[in-house]
Length: 265
Image (cartoon, rainbow, N blue to C red; front, side, top):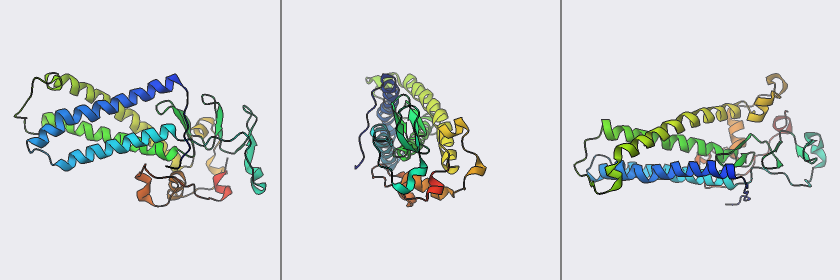
């Protein structure tokens, strides 16, 4: 899709991402098997709800994979610095390479990343200028999918009519209560965690401040001009077309912005 592949060798990150994939597979397989398809066959729900469930699941998986393998903005060893932009570059005191301001050196990955927000073990990658938009989509679709699955789990027991047909020979139906309790526990845990993360990410984009900048207290409101939220989101997603902010299958094109906005740190 036109993006450079970036693969981080980190066993800890592999375990975290493997856990995320397990939760995704658990819900994508068992929720339809226990709830969606049986209620659809008995006429309790329309088929469009199943299509929406799988559509959100696919968008979530694509955002996860692309956020994990997309180059977050790694700087080359010998970057070409335009003559008129030298004042917006600085020397990294860890790798001794020139980098644009607002870049950060990731100790886990071992290189500098443009406009790095943080290193996320759940995608086994840094969140930087070139994959921040995919990370936001991952947060959004994960939260949407979790709410969708929890809603159907609740309706299965407290709203939908009882199922008339039960194939007790199948493992999932013999242990339905335990499976659904585990799904609800994982869903609630995921929802609480991702809601807090998504909120902090949105606030960071609105205020045009990365997580690292917040922790280091290097950004003062009075030291930089304030941009409208539409501009900051457009810069992150690489387009001013808001409908494209929700599409993980496209290629991001960075927007050209004035340097007194882009390099305020």
